[in-house]
Image 1: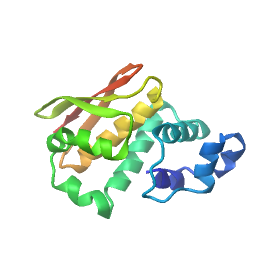
Image 2: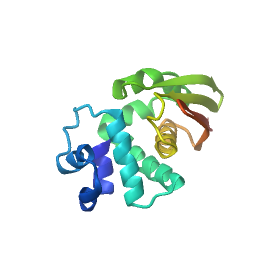
Image 3: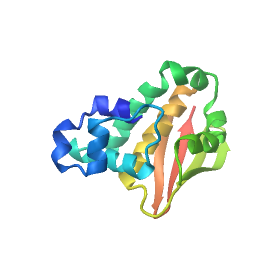
Amino acid sequence: MYRDSAQDRPMHDALPWLPAPLAELVVRPPLVSTWVPSVTMQALFLAIADHYAMSDEHFMQWTHRTQKTLLSGRLYRSMMALASPALLLTGTSVRWRSFHRGSEIEVDQVGAGTARLSVVFPRGLYATTNLMGFAGGFQAVAELSNATTATVVLTDVLPTRGVFTVRWS
């Protein structure tokens, strides 16, 4: 995910003000198979948002676009095309754990054309901007899974939880 983001929003000219762990990611991007701590990734995404003067809404739109491009690729395309949004959301907790450590997704309800889910995390791990980025990613997943329209709204931000409402037709 970082590699795609870095190609779209390069950060080399921000190296002088980036903390060392973030500068290292910019200078030496890890292999695609390398796990990067969530706090490092989220800090880098906040740095991208700051460097490119993105509002939370703009960050959500950017994340939506980059995630849609990533998930439309050869690796993920077939999984997305064969599942409905409800089916993908029902199994999202397991997939989330494959990519994230220390946080989880709880799917509170899934109905016809609507779902509510929460990202649960240690206090302070995700800022509102980061959660808006997740909303963009969730919207990309819904759109690529046979939904004709999809919207995701970050409905509540708590110190250890972000709550999202997903709607599709």
